[in-house]
Image (cartoon, rainbow, N blue to C red; front, side, top):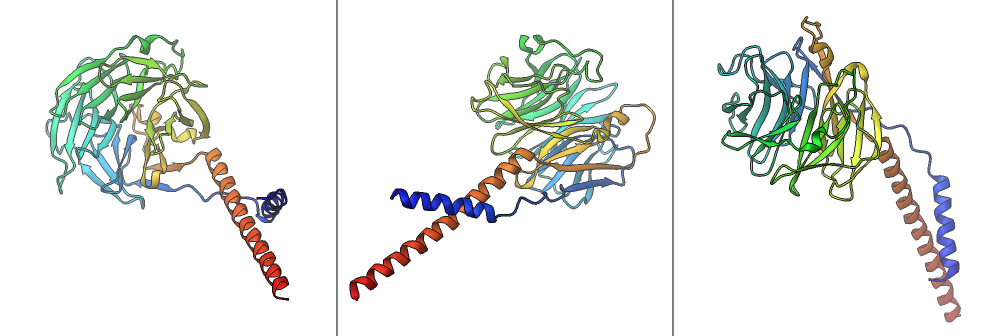
Length: 362
């Protein structure tokens, strides 16, 4: 390709950019509204791709709900459905384990802290598969590996439990790394240690710590852990989720952190932050249909108070990385510009060819 041709393509590309209008404002985020369950105060959220709905647990009720993209809500586990569940219990972390078609739910009550497993294959209300006590602990969030083992964070003791597919529990990790960083004093999350947890199919777990803002990589085989080196702390980190492209999203009650790693999480970078509605007090995040990220506004700060706040509406809202949206728009413009430049170049070449053929036949 000659120098003149290259210059021609570049000039046409810049001309195309001049013709393309600026990116318009993005469409409003997808909003899912939860109504009809006063004082529900949902704290946890997971997505069931098979049923195409979200599952959430209540901070104030021993109940589990499903809700569709169109805000159609159904009760999966009515209060009192299983006599073995304490009537004054609540569900914190929930996880749809689509490999085993189970719903894992972290249960807390004054008399019992445990992991409950329910069978999602039943066409009716959820049968209880097991209820495994987690004594002397403050269980919070749950993840599961491909073999059906569950991993539950203990926020008060900075440890991780492992529960086998049959429901046998053991302490999996008490790594010194979990207590090697200074705790932020005098905050609402000061007493909350290990919190959100996710499983990576390459053989490790990622877990965040609320009161230090740190993330840890935990070996699936022996529970050894090390701090993931990030470019900033994840202040008040709570729930976390992973997109198909490997980007991890961590939420606090004010911020959604978008994090990526090119080193299998030896280190990572917070490449964008999205401000959240602080009044909604986000506590959980899930990846829904089409790899879209959703945050749960459950107002759990109100729910932790003893008196009933009387709140009747809660929200699940889509969140996006503004930086990623801008980068996507730039690439679209580049492809359109190059495509148009190539078309113009092709027309130019065809015109030259026709001119040369006319000269030869003259």
